[in-house]
Length: 262
Image 1 (spheres, rainbow, N blue to C red):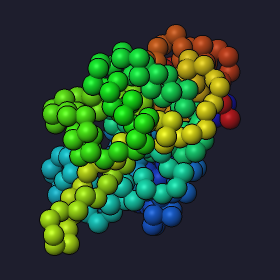
Image 2 (tube, one colour):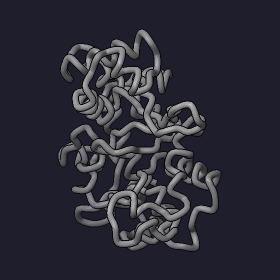
Image 3 (spheres, rainbow, N blue to C red):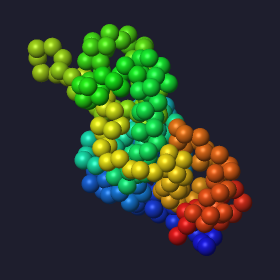
């Protein structure tokens, strides 16, 4: 087993945490995603981050939110999300997570279970109406959903948060024309998970969550056990992490720390 110090050094290299490993272009960013399998947008955990790996100064240094995004590469988030084979559900506790094809296949049983719960009304009648409408009409813009379902903006926003954070629905950026003159505004197109990712994987949701944890640890290289509980929209317990270590699917390089089995 590598030592904790060796794993930390490997993490710095593989997660591109130094400027000499900065992403060169969008193709490089896509290769980074394929290598790590999953990326967060901004650095908020030990999972690798797209924006952190650009090593570009912030758009508005010292300011939070969009101001902290890279000065010229802030578009990379939407541009990477638009690439074929990249899926971006908000299953990182309601925040966007870039998934490679392998990661999308891994999380599929969890998102399908969420979709079934939503369709059964367990996320509320508005969420159920949205997933039923998407099943009939296909991916639909937010504006069309408001009009066709008669939903108020606040109501739609609340239902979207439940659906997207559970992986039942995936949003993609959409440009909506404005007025007669050329111009547009940014909106979203919503799709059910089974429309965004059509390849059903017959694994139990509990087994899929174990695999997502392992995938996340592999992406981070090494991380503290307690942090893993903050990663995903589904609950991860200490006992489940202990079980993964005891079964040899994760390893402990130090007290409280976990790494993927090599």
